Amino acid sequence: MDLLFDTVYQSQDLPEKLWSISARSRRVSNWAERRADATKVSTAGVAADILLLNDILRRAPAAASDICFKICDNAEGSDNLICVQDSWFELFEQAATYGNKLLHSGRWYSMVVCYHSTKHQLRFCFFTIQGMFVTPVLRLAVQSEYGQLVDALFAFCDLTPYERGVHPLFIDHPQKYILLPFDTGGSTAWWKVASVLSVRIAFRGRRSMVAVINQKDTGQAIQDEEVSSTPRKPLVNDEGFLLDERRRWLDNTLAKTEYLPLGLDEFLTEWKSFVRLAGPHMHFKEGILKMGYCLQEDSDVQKEIFHCTAGQHGIPDVLPIMELKHGLGIFRGLTCSSCPDFASFPGQFKIEVEDRVELISICLDNGQSLLGEDLTMRGWIRCLIDGIVGCFHLFLSGYLHRDISIGNVLCRRVPQSRDKLRDNNHPHLRTERFAFMNNVLDSCSGFLIDSDTAIKWRSSGYAQSANRRFYGTRQFMSRRLLFMWIYGKDPVVHTVFDDLESFAWLALWIAASKDPDGPHSQKYIDFLDSDDFEMLLSHKITTALYFTNDTRWCTADRGKPESAIRTIRPLLKEWFSIIDKYHTESIMANWDEAYVENGEGNGFFDKLQTLGEQVCCEYLEKAVEFLDTLPLDPE
Image 1 (cartoon, rainbow, N blue to C red):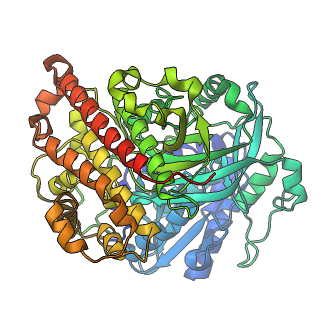
Image 2 (cartoon, helix red, strand yellow):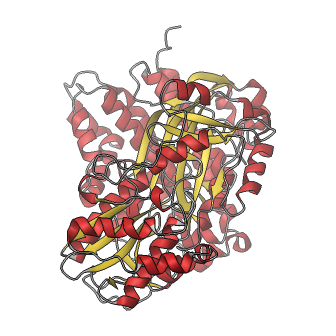
Image 3 (tube, rainbow, N blue to C red):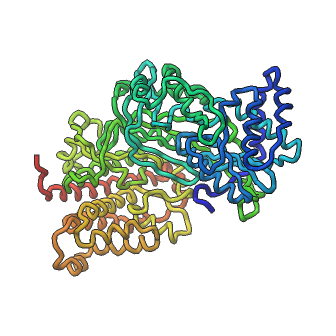
């Protein structure tokens, strides 16, 4: 099965929802005549099949000439595609491939028509962030089903650009732009994506993108010929001259930046809330944009996690997060089963469709990777300490990050003075117990990003989080989580101890990566990068023993030249020893789910917080002690 999707949903409800949209067209006086004319169109052969759809569309009461279809063989620049094969399996694979490409271009869903060339049957395939939905077959030789095809196409061409899946705020052709508020009054402006930092693809085509954005003057964009100053005229449906609806929409929209996008449920309220909460930060000139999808049930955590810890050490400055509940509604409340023409198993059971929302966030801290060439060991160790402090702040506020990795701990280009923010830090960091942190808290060089997998641990939902799946980046996952993933029969919850151990594996990864010629550097990178989880766990267990056992270390390291890994060994020895010590505590066992759910009442959460504070304190103390042994960076 193609990795682009894990199943194909066949929905009886989808065509009815789509066809019901044609009610808008029926208000046109000559709708019935146009429909009757369209049902007389005949088809024969592949080339005529494309003409069939366009001939029907040209007879629709709406802007039919604006929508053209093209065979999927060379689909660059076309939004409306036809797959022609003699196998439904191949059709769905091809539809998923092209649908996924369209989804990545900034759409919130894409539509591909699948035509079975030998059976003369047709299906609409909608590739969405929730999966791929297909309608039951329409047999073109059956008059009533051919009439349903006409109704569906009439409905499709009568949709607004947003309803067709064109993103209301994001444009990806020919340049990437995003529409955002410009000032506290709510005026809008287009921001250009200057560079894409990362793109993460998940199952079912879900994508999250992180990019640097700069404000872009619309007039300058037109002058630079990134967009044309006038909308393009409709073109004939020729292989080399297809109408690019996205470009046309871009041209029309760029000139109307004073208007907020319409069509999103409750979006105007979301927009006003964004402007109100952003306040003085609205006048930024550069930011880090993140666009991604999360489960609806997780969206509150995503929106709260960095705001409730704003201004604290190791935490990024993030503007309020906008939530877009996409939808025409045709993908909500569907009664679905797996498609029997595609799946190898019976498709009579019901399938739960994930309810996902799009979140757009802007971080005002433009960080750089800890693998940067100009970053010394003292520099990146300092960033890790700042990241641990940030992780500690999240924990004390009731959150777990759950994905400490090389891309989620960054270095500020210019360290921030934190003198004024000392009182913003949690009271625990201002106690005598943390006196060793005094010098470290004077400035902040590193910070955490990415709350995609974060959860709220001081809640009854903490126990249920174990029933979904494990989270993290495999190279940096703790040994405990890997072991439970491979061998555990019962769910296991993520803890702050797992996040702390991830910092140890991250330190090893950085040391090996920045000293590629050092002895064993490539070996560590290779084993940490292994996608064999059993082998990865075995290597991590052996490595932790190697770093914590003086006899093994001396035997293996005797005669080896100086290296970054040898330098960092004292810190890794202490960190692994701390985690191993607390691993034996009863609190680290696999807890009973009912007991965890009642954590506030039975004292479990208080006990976990007390132990977490203790482990974080020891972890930070050993890190600061190690930092003091490193030479100062040159001025």
